[in-house]
Image (cartoon, rainbow, N blue to C red; front, side, top):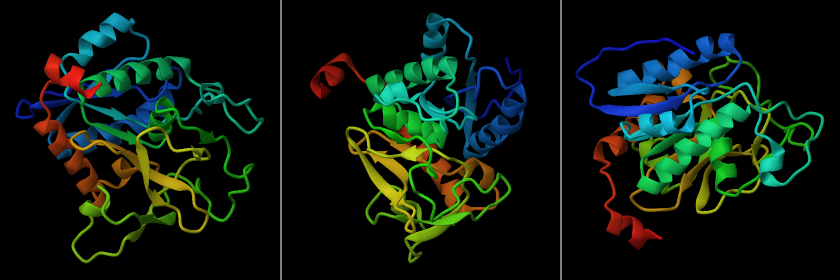
Length: 263
């Protein structure tokens, strides 16, 4: 279990973020701090959700958070979750991370809490919404772009952002709808999940790079790249986190009659 502690009393909104993996301490210690730093800089308090807690304990933690951030992971999504046999190039899954992600997503959808899903988190979100994944981009013939050039490559490849989308609204006025992002993944969205819509693609090979929920008033955004890694250097990355935190600050608990009416 990780032991980062924060005491910034001026922050009011609390964001649940699961540990990236259940077994790779080194990966967690390397990858989690940029998420936490970005959330703090954007004005939120991250609440780390341990992956080995009982479900009732996780549910209790979720009562005190107003938004969910699903981070990346070094593990893959189990293809059985979207009714496919595993191919040799598909890596192992992380059942403990998956179980916690399921609880966080279900809670967020039940109560319309905002979600920001990044890389593995975006893939998990898509599968939870009954979508499917490309198990391995190279095996699937998607070789026009190197989607995993390494953590230190800041501008790996361009993405084209759909005009009128939430992401497009975060671009500076007059900015082109195509910009370069970092990239660190070998799986990707194949069939977009229910009520999600693709809002960014890699123009060279058509790989879906971002999705958003097609429900007005519920902020759910999934991006395949890693804006937390470029938070200090990229105004667009900061805008993504700022929009997420703005939505969290505007969130209010849904009344029972609202929940029933939305069914």
